[in-house]
Image 1: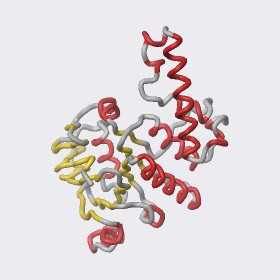
Image 2: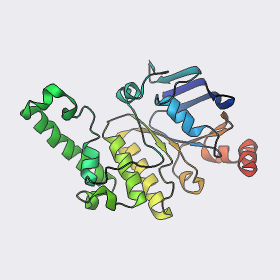
Image 3: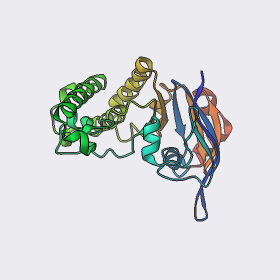
Length: 252
């Protein structure tokens, strides 16, 4: 099993605060990996650096064979990395289906030239609708397809956020707290669907998550961070029983 993502000695500071202090970690292809740690340990900052929303002060990030260090979010997205955020941002006046369709990569409406050639954009629009419908079915949201997104529950919005990322056809998905604020039943369903997506399509997930009582049942690897540093990495049971990890959580 090869590496799909390599983070090497990445540092990021905000004034005197060292948000990332020499982080090195790997994500293997076709795995579900989570990143854990107390609040303020640097998890979301690391996602922001990987996806180009922040530039690292030092270090290197490789995605497959490509060096993506310091690239813009659009360049990282085009390379094959998609992400979600802690708080889903829905287009409330659009339907659930439309919220996915507008996220289609290389949407014909983005091109002034192609937008005037009806036969091109009509086919692309039809294909995007079919693709979005299939994704909603995979996520268990078919019944909500034609409902306004503002009618969805918080957990369903989290699934739509994942669905919009899936419209990119990326190979690596970075999810920031996908079950935060979600009831336990739906939280388990979200992780079960993540596993199903990995099994069916061979895609890879790196997930920031606090709810270890749920997440640990579904993941292959765990990376633990404290104060901007990686303190443990490996299979779930091994990391959770690590004295440094136990101390970090008890201390928090």
